Image 1 (tube, rainbow, N blue to C red):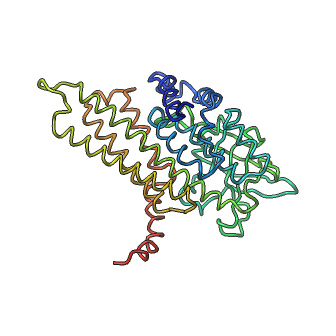
Image 2 (image 1 turned 90 degrees about the vertical axis):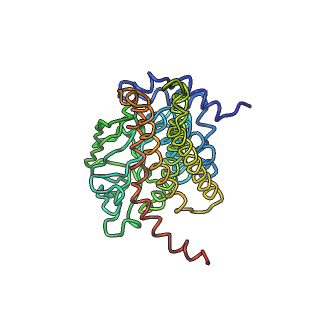
Image 3 (image 1 turned 180 degrees about the horizontal axis):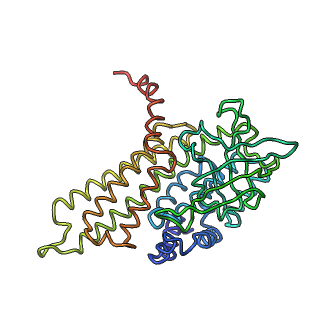
Length: 374
């Protein structure tokens, strides 16, 4: 049986050419047809996100490859894997069938949490759902809902009981994109416009009670799980992109001649690349450690948040070092390093800002310190 990770890599090499990736980045080409082709060829089946934590070793390995080739394509595969995982773990039987359709490329998923006043600060969630009989009516405004314009279903986080704290009064609804009262507008980003992020306006959008995922007022636990998985996948993507950037710059430095010798022979250059390679290895080990602990049933918040913060900050340094070594070439529009610079910024926000990661680590730090006896 062929190695599935190698199959994904070969597919990316064949399909995600520089022209295709640039066209998606600029919004000239949609990532959706490619995703459907990828899924229909069975490459999503290898990831098996519906298996939950057991899928993480394969999923993170795949995300590393995808992020190395295209932000758009990495985003669409990661989001639909995450959606299939959520519906497989928390959905009812009908919703589990939708997760299987997503893996075959027949349905597309979007997750929408962020609002104008609620991102990392989920306490300020304003979008509301009011029940009338067997229906709920949703009102509010969502931002940065990646994939909403193409999704068949949007998983909306709403306040379903305003009298309770957010961790006891929030629900998740799986809402069909064609629902009346739902208006979707793509937002123009600096990168990855082939799979656009969107604003969603909800004006008395009617949703049936069976659209609830995880139960009424029980969305907090699902959100917590989603946040942890997203951070881990962001970290894995950063490792993948960092590895691709350093490999690209290394090959350039071997070929570029200065004063009759390769650029790589200049000590600052080879020391810089050596340092980055070691740091990438450290980030990769952090991701693998977190994956191993989640797969064994633990809840390694410090490890997950630490991996996300470390890998995303490292990514900025890797790309800026690439800009310096490549010189003016990297400053040209449509150059790979220029695109990677724009794509890489997203990791600072995706899964929560790094300041939020440090807040979450700080909350867990007393417990960690108590375990250490010196």
